[in-house]
Amino acid sequence: MNVIVGQSGGPTSVINASLAGVYQAALKAGAKIVYGMKNGIKGLLEGRLISLNGILDSDLKIELLKRTPSSFLGSCRYKLKEIENDTEEYEKIFTLLKQYDIGCFFYIGGNDSMDTIGKLSAYGKKIGSSVRFVGVPKTIDNDLMVTDHTPGYGSAAKFVATVMKEIICDATVYGTNYVTIVEVMGRNAGWLTAASALAKGEDCVGVDMICLPEIPFTVEGFIEKVANIQKRKKSVVIAVSEGVKLPDGRYVCELSDTVQDVDSFGHKKLTGTAQFLANECAKKLKTKTRAIELSTLQRCCGHLTSRTDITEAYQVGGAAVLAAMEGKSGVAITLVRISDKPYQYTTGTVEIEKIANLEKKIPVAWINDTHTDMLAPFFDYARPLIQAELTPFYVDGLPYHISLKE
Ligand code: F6P
Image (cartoon, rainbow, N blue to C red; front, side):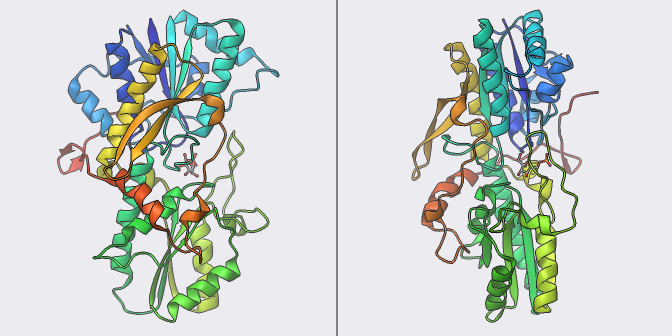
């Protein structure tokens, strides 16, 4: 039979390695055609499918795909309706799956995308369909339950720690009072912001403060901490999560005047926290400030991927095909850590309802008493994930990427 694969949610710099993993494993397992949905489930609903066989037809293209950041097939943030309320979308999807002789459906995504796998497998069960639905994990946020970590996180963490080191070098040049606030993605989980702690080493003093969404945040408390650090150090570099929240539950960025869009899963667009806090520091502490929002740079940094991450991203794609071949459906692939030193892992599966729509936060025991730095368990956890590099293919001085022709 044929298989279909889609990508959903915010991209990562290694999400295409998972696509390559699904594609190659599916062909090896005997699939005739590997279809791609353009823009995930939204595109599928609009009948926008393409055969990948004619596109990914050489080893070079597969290698290029692995080294191309962002979602090759395009993405979406689309929530399927509740089955009890409306089955029209499901009927449409299952008709298409039948029409294209699809036996397995793979969806590469985060906790919201796993909602799609959960709903489709539940509907499939209800109507007695034999199509198998398997989720392939990805997200820079690293907030999926059960899995030890998610593909995409290691490379984004490597990028964040790297740029923090570079920012710290730059921030000391004038020798004057200077507060640099760097905003890191991660919505409601601080895993990626915590990765800025990895910058510290024998060649780098590290960041001075890390603000995570796991710890309630007050603007006054923040200013006080910065003022205290400035008493002993002129240049202060801070990593702040886009998702830091006030004790009343509002995001700090809601205090700023940036526009707050909401996506189909009800997530607010988080932006402007660093700028807001930098303005507050400038006003209250009369210091030079700079706000740096890493924004999409941290999830499309194909020039700085972790080889560990990209390898794992490829493997979870293959593991998803294997799981489907074994008859599993309504599951997602997980990474299971065997040991930290040496770093060893394997893959597993988990029932989709154990991860869909849920968020895994950093254990508070991994954060220091003053809530400004990470403790040893975090370093043991995160350091293996950023190891080694896979450089892009450079052409004419720049990374070369593969893309779908419109
Ligand atoms: O997919 C996760 C993520 O990158 C979050 O870190 C971030 O808050 C969100 O996506 C941004 O989403 P979008 O690109 O749709 O605005």
